Length: 104
Image (cartoon, rainbow, N blue to C red; front, side, top):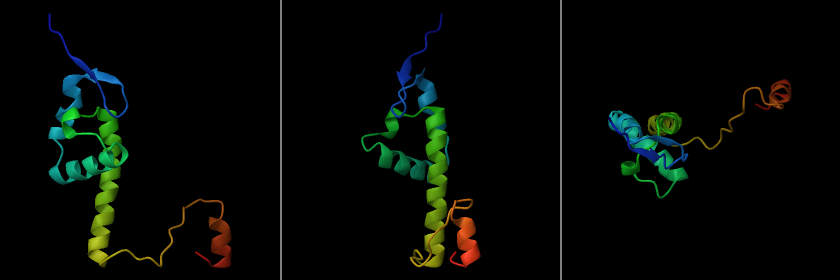
């Protein structure tokens, strides 16, 4: 009989087989892994890569890491953040009014 050790995901506290907390992290592209870890540590300062993360948590933070990479690339390419630009949410309640008034 094969026994599987289970651990809690340190990010969501769900129980997973131990190997499911580490394999996907090790196989991630190094740049994406680094940015994902930065995002996780921003929300969970005491988290260590050795603790692992379940697949659903890792995917969620990985998407935030992708966005972080895109923002960093834009900052590098544009030479810094454009502080004159105020982003507007598409579909916000004021978007139509702003469009009519020409304030977007």
